[in-house]
Image (cartoon, rainbow, N blue to C red; front, side, top):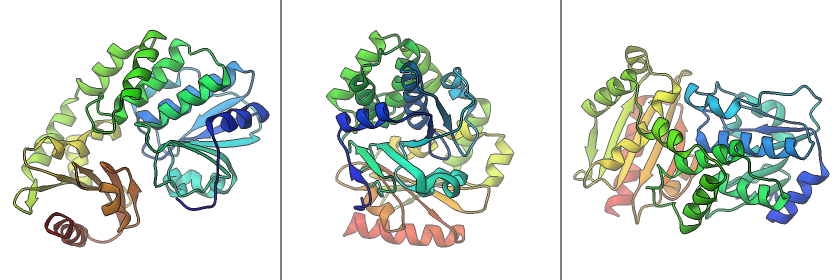
Amino acid sequence: MTAMSKLVSVKQTAEILNKNDKYLILTHSHPDGDTLGSGFGLCSALRSLGKKANVICSDEIPEKFRYLTVEGNEEFEVETVISVDVADQKLLGSLKEKYAESVLLSIDHHATNTGFAENLYLEGDSAAATECVYNVIKELGVKITPFIATCLYTGLATDTGCFKFSNTTPRTHIYAAELMAAGADYNEINRVMFEVKSQARIEMERQVLNGIEYICDGRCAIVTVTQEMIRETGCDSSDMDGIAAMSRTIEGVSIGVTVREKSDGRWKVSLRTFEPYDASAIASDFGGGGHIRAAGCEFGCSLEEVKTQLKAKITEVLEG
């Protein structure tokens, strides 16, 4: 993290939110359950305090997360900009140019946060940004409604792989239990997020597994997803959730890599690791970041060059 932001406590964060009005809440591009759950949960909490608030994203919200948006948008002139679960302003996508320099407050759980906002409430040991938002909402004294609970539980469940990933802590389980008690629709969330797969997703998994590569005696698995594969299978963005975690399930694999072609021709790389390997350290060598067990970066070169660079670095890590 850079020294640009002023680090603030949960109490100071609540004071900022109480002091200001008419909020625009920014989520990261290629939205997941954590950024959307954080955004819409906080939005609902702010509205309950009589404030104006909306959530926006540079990309279309996947169909399976539409239940988080039921409260809709309000009409007002924005005065205060917040970001949630956004570690770097470049993750704002097309919203970056307009809003990146005017973010008053960032609420995040990424230790690699670049400090682009004026104020930063950072809990680097939290499993999800929704843990941070939950702290803030409680500090604000807002009642946790079933809708807010559903939003926050969604972030907890999706960022922990249904509480299976190593970022899950005792506090994560405590918060999940509290949100369940507050009315979170946990059964349906877990079913939709972790059990239901479209036929397009099943076909994509078949193609991905068919083209898997191993290096370092099988300790690293690399899977590739091209735009051609996306067209052939008919997958949309929500179908792609979880593809990056597939390599984690292979026996003997310590580092899993997913290389996915974006619509603009660039390559998005997702890294998943087991102890003692640090995914964020690998990603940072290529201008990316994230968490110890899950991180990412992007490349603008050819697929062959992407893999050459990744294989060299990962070989160095695994055999060094």
